[in-house]
Image 1 (cartoon, rainbow, N blue to C red):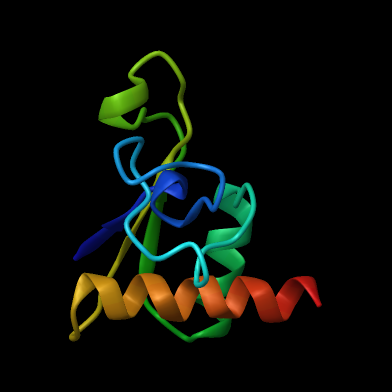
Image 2 (cartoon, rainbow, N blue to C red):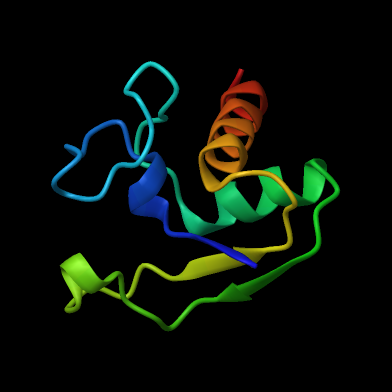
Length: 89
């Protein structure tokens, strides 16, 4: 299982603030529901945890999604981000 926090995909955040992919691949302010829809569209098994906080922002419950994925975390994050971009266009 790979964990996806919305912060991993947020174009507005720096790498120190939690972004895990390049800005060119990231999206602006991804919500938990955006990520969940993208994961569903990709046909991946997942679990949503809404009442958890990203460790870097322990005071803000942003939620996370656990995804079953065979590849690397970076590949998954890029796929999900691309799917969110496609959904928004």
